[in-house]
Image (tube, rainbow, N blue to C red; front, side, top):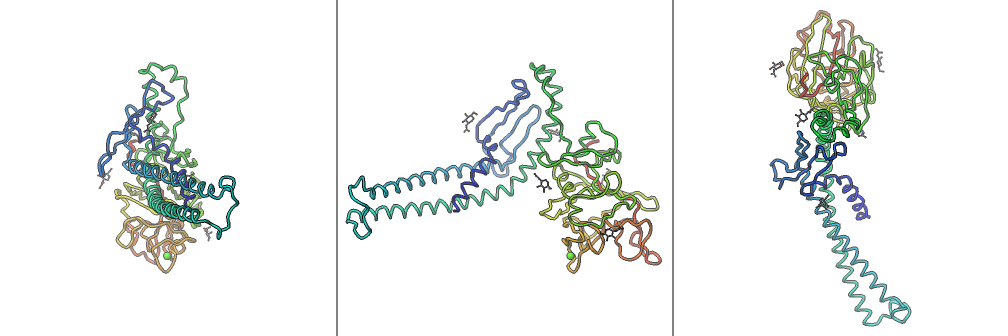
Length: 440
Ligand SMILES: *[C@@H]1O[C@H](CO)[C@@H](O)[C@H](O)[C@H]1NC(C)=O
Ligand SMILES: *[C@@H]1O[C@H](CO)[C@@H](O)[C@H](O)[C@H]1NC(C)=O
Ligand SMILES: *[C@@H]1O[C@H](CO)[C@@H](O)[C@H](O)[C@H]1NC(C)=O
Ligand SMILES: *[C@@H]1O[C@H](CO)[C@@H](O)[C@H](O)[C@H]1NC(C)=O
Ligand SMILES: *[C@@H]1O[C@H](CO)[C@@H](O)[C@H](O)[C@H]1NC(C)=O
Ligand SMILES: [Ca+2]
């Protein structure tokens, strides 16, 4: 029954949003257990949230202030409507029960002193009573129908809010929680000198820091390039990554490396999804992990290339995001800066930005009559097909035939015709990311 489904959904949604209801309250003091009376944290509502205006809810943790997005206000509205509907449905249910009881009463032989009558044997009074009940039932059922329609509409709105806004809000809150962890830990030092209950605070263990990516390790003083364990999404698993703590200040989380051809990059969708190779040599970190890392913070992308003549150039993109598997790991890159040329946005016809990921066994490219991944032996964000492909085959020298080696289309001289149709390749390639606002 549809209605029953709705009840399930609504209570699940109410439970999931339970924390948001707090925003309903006027001013509430939330006391951190750790710092009982010492350091109060406040969540306040500061008046109406107008479309397009600043948002009214704020959590204050000295000296940190979080502005909650205005969608919170909309969720609150929907809550109220759902609450009203719940009451309406409850009262309808109750009157329906009353009505059923009355109908049972009129048939009760103990009360009316006679046996249950057959339908043909009803008296006129019973007829009237039955008609009355009938019309009451009709009215109730039409009320119920209206309520159900309204519920359907609201359900649609809730689902939409859930899909559209909860993702943003979740990311937003996640990032703020990560920030809070930092702030709380740094406050711990300051607080103990100012606050009265310092002994109590000092005796409690400091909450373990979450290292979301290599820049967090850099921040706590790690300076050697090696593997570290990161947890970009506190709700998801943690995993090992290789950190480059030297290039341009360090703090880089490496997502791809080529240097000797020891790892085969002609791989399936599943391999590119989970990652493969050796983190200390050649590898692809894995599209799921790249997604989690680029989702946890605003990232930039750096690509380092070296050819067999020892020329080293780089490309820097001021934004880097890889969508989830459902969105086929779509690539989002920002503006270019650097020395190697902007091969990812080569031209209108060769542009890797906003392209889906393709592997030899999964064709999501823009080339209609074939699979670019299969043709170029690689998993990559192919257009139709390429002006860059850092996951091509590793050639130790010049090669002939299909241009399926590591390729960067803006490299000086790379597209010039060589005698004998030879194509040049690269000795080393590396792709890595770092939070946009990271300052080494
Ligand atoms: C506001 O919070 C107080 C104390 O936590 C509680 O007693 C009250 O019912 C809340 N009011 C609303 C409208 O939620
Ligand atoms: C955390 O937030 C504060 C204030 O909002 C800001 O100054 C600080 O740079 C942030 N820290 C990180 C690591 O994002
Ligand atoms: C790499 O793997 C592909 C697919 O399994 C295979 O066809 C190819 O021969 C391998 N290449 C090398 C150099 O081993
Ligand atoms: C963890 O991340 C992966 C990759 O994005 C995703 O498929 C999975 O649903 C996530 N798991 C949880 C518990 O969030
Ligand atoms: C590129 O980066 C350099 C070095 O950080 C900087 O000086 C320059 O302004 C940047 N150029 C653009 C177009 O952003
Ligand atoms: Ca295709």
